[in-house]
Amino acid sequence: MESRSSSLADVLERVLDKGIVVAGDIAVNVVDIELLTLRVRLFIASAQTAKELGMDWWTGDPFFAPHSARPAVESGLAEENTLLRQKIADLERALGDQS
Amino acid sequence: MTGRIQDLAAEHASHVLAQALPAAIAQATTELTALLAKAIVAEATRAQGETGLCAYAITRTHDWDPAAMPDLHAAAPPRLITRNGLGLVATDVSLSLFSGLEAKTSEDSPLATLAREHDAVVRAVFERAPVLPLRFGTIVAGEQAAHQLLDTRHNELLERLALVAGHREWGVRVRYEPPAEEPVEGLSGTDYLRMRQQTLAGGTEVTQAAKSLHTKLSQHASDVTCHDDTVLDAAYLVAVEQEDAFRTEAAALTAHLVDLGATVHATGPWPPYSFTRLELAVSG
Image (cartoon, rainbow over all chains, first blue to last red; front, side, top):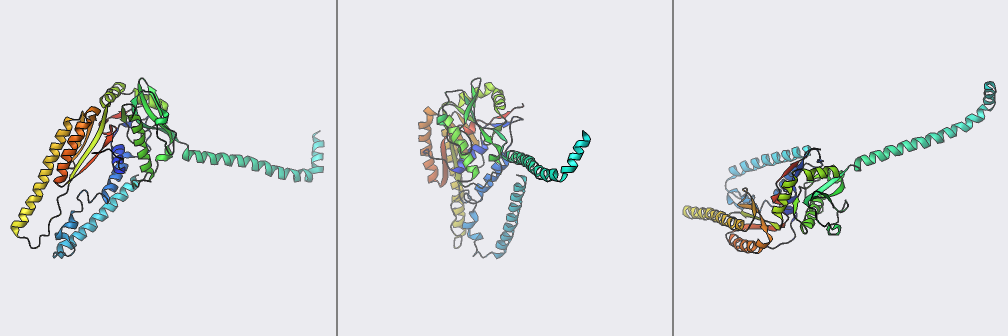
């Protein structure tokens, strides 16, 4: 537990998500912090930390591996995967339109 | 008299007209150029000219050292706006600085630069006086608004500053990913069940170790915040004189968790970002 320079993800987590919020008509809303925070989280969770979070569990599971002897299950998953990807893309687009 | 001028005009009409035409063109050019220039300036200042006070933190009034502030890439160094013993650390910014911030965060993205600057300013003040950090992107209209902000819940702000004074924040996050399972082919049913049981037991052990870590670290902290979405995601507000004990405890228990296969992400020291959950709704 040594102090060191903080990673960007750590800094973003603190400055975007914590701290006193000022509301009311003296505040000038230049950026939708809630939305930005959500998008940063999505981005950070998307690739680089998926492994750390254990979200790539399927890659090590022979049950779902390409040489699996369960093609029916596999193609079902592929289909579900495509559907989910489509949904994520739609959500991201919806978020993009809002900002 | 009138007849004489008409005569003169008629006599010299072609000459006067020839002179008047280029003069009129020159005069029109000058006037239209001025109008057009005015419009261009108005357009340009509409895009960039809107400014506000970007606020970083609330602190006590103290000996302000401008040289201790970090350089900001698109604004003057922050100043201290004071009011009845409280101070707002802020600087004038162009609002366009904050428009179109992308969530895609590489180190050289505008969001990364601004977020790092925000943290750097808060830390610079934190080195010298107790601070209550403000959320990134807090912009108030001007100095009058800054005064109103400091007047609102003045006493509560002073109390909170007293609570965080002499403290630093430390973060600890524990994650557990069960080890990749051995290929099940060729395993007997009994062996498979034993393997599953070991995996599940590992998770329970980690959860218990994390709970014990949290309990022990909390004993050294003045305040604690905790999220439930992972095995442990906590922030501890630790008095400076408790830091050695806190860090020794954290190091020992962290090593135990790592032995059990958990990932421990410890960060700090931070200004008390997680201990200012407070919303200031201020109307002008």
